[in-house]
Amino acid sequence: MSVKTFLLPDLGEGLTEAELVKWLVSVGDTVVIDQPIAEVETAKSMVEVPSPYAGTVHQLHGAAGEMIQVDTPLISVLEEGSEAPTAPAPEREVALSYREEERAGATEPKSEGSGNVLIGYGTPEGLSAKARKRRPRAGAVAAVASSAQSVAASVRAPLVISPLVRKLAKERGIDIASVRGSGAGGLILRSDVETASSAVSQAIPVDPAPVAVAPVQVSAIAVNVPAGERDSRSGLTIASRTQLTGVRKTIAAAMTRSRSEIPEATVWVDVDATALLEMRSALKAKEPENTPGLLAFIARFVVAGLQKYPELNTRIETNAQGDAEIIGFEGINLGIAAQTDRGLMVPAIRNVQQLSARGINTELARLTEVTRAGKATIAELTSGTFTLNNYGVFGVDGSAAIINYPEVAILGVGRIIDKPWVVNGELAVRKVTELTLAFDHRVCDGGVAAGFLRFVADAMENPAGALADL
Image 1 (cartoon, rainbow, N blue to C red):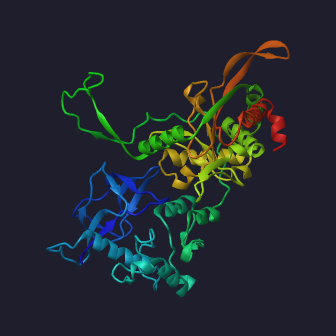
Image 2 (cartoon, rainbow, N blue to C red):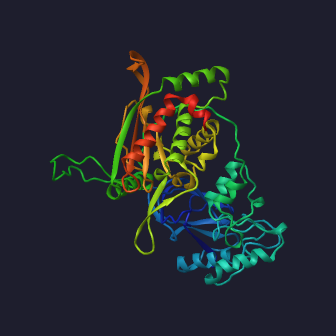
Image 3 (cartoon, helix red, strand yellow):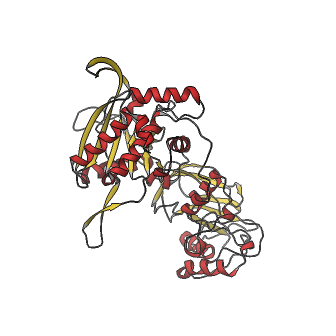
């Protein structure tokens, strides 16, 4: 068949759909292998989808703003040197045939190819678009492993599980061909790229207040409203109808599930942060380019608190017998809530317990940048085990925060303002903030939550002493 149809792949983490943001090509355009053809938005990330074929764009399956289901047609390409068919074959049959080819093997003597953009979608390095081998779909995974083992390493193409992994390697400056995959048949996973990546990057100070962000743009699809249509409940004319999609849809689902499943309780405390601000000011006077922001110091105290009260760094799951279990972790992935022009995102600093305040500051700066640019990976946006929310940047003192499901607790930090405070029996003006902890009452009682909150508060009030013990 001269027309090849490409199905939208699973872009990672078992996603079932993506919103088609915009086409980067039009019908009649000439495309080459690996050329970006469309921008799609998954539940968390914006991704450019590359073409696995070279030729002329024959058909675009969908319009900007539509939701495209995984394993349904995305684009059809008339391959080079082919003539348009008079009676097209069923698209799914064509697409599945293509997937059988690509999953069957990923190595051949070196020639021009795409380097296997994602398993099953893209040409392996050294395998041209017209020289692919076909094997039964049922034996796809075994065939990949067999093929990978049968060819010398010098001609082996990198096996990448998704474009997000490939994108992560590019962002970190990692040659994907040099990464050893730990997955089946040598598949390169996200963790393999992260292992190969340098953990040290240039330190960039981060202050607690982020740079100004654009007004939040709801990720949704506007629906036409008949002129003069009235709401039966309020009697008002309906101005708009907006379908929840993409990020907004994901946030709504997560928040609803959190409220419906988690019996949460909240504790809070006012904190005299004067000593913390003074300590940071002294450090900044000595090292203006290498002093962590306040949020990095607070995050380090939070990590120490979670190590002392690990009940708050857990998750509740249901086992195979239907019983609830509390799952504990050896490490801590600290999520930092960030408002972006695409909505609320919570990128996580993974294994944060291994980092100093300076290390946290550096990683926080990197995550903030990639998240606001829409380039954070799904793993970075979904792997948190506890969330720190600095809502003080919005000028508020406190918040009844919703726990970031499936985590069991979230700590909020309010604005730091001058307040009257009693110091050594005398009234003084101090820099005061409020800490608010919402926690899942199933994993612990108030004593644990209060103990953790008091630990973080004491560390902020005596930062030098706390850091000496970390």
